[in-house]
Amino acid sequence: MDWSYVAGFFDGEGGIHIGFNRSKTRGKLYIIPRVQLSLAGTHQKSIKAIFEFLLSQNIACGFFTQITERKPEYTVKITLVSPMKMFIDAMEPLLIIKQDSLAFFKEALIIFNQHKTGSHWTDEQLKKFGEIVDKNKPFVLHRGRTRNSHRS
Image (cartoon, helix red, strand yellow):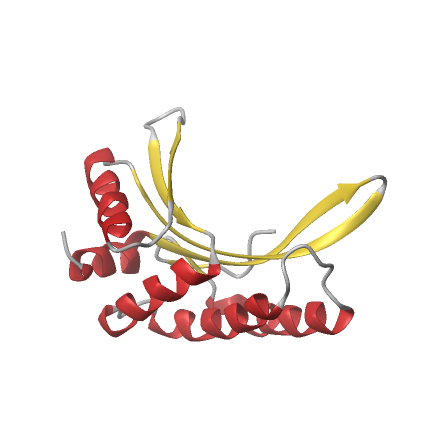
């Protein structure tokens, strides 16, 4: 396993997720920006090998199994900022399809990283993050396909 294999897999079956989650606490609605990178497929051995390779490169990630009607789907998710940066730095020169998407993902990650954990997002931070999401909606790639909307 090497970065070239992971990059090829990510170019075809990887997901770049930028958007907002909604959370309701004590009757109050909160909008929470979210960033995530993922790789998914139905071949467990391949996804597990990628997961183990990323861990060997000190990239914190999770391995998930989703049972569907047809086949189980296996997913590796990276949700922490520092591991995402390491992943991007290693992958960026090797990507073809998702090269442009990573550029705006990095822009969103900078704003996301400026937010202090445990504090509420300011209106200005939410607006700036939302502008990046809205500006790049047509280019959000999910598993190799261009989507006109982002997950939220």
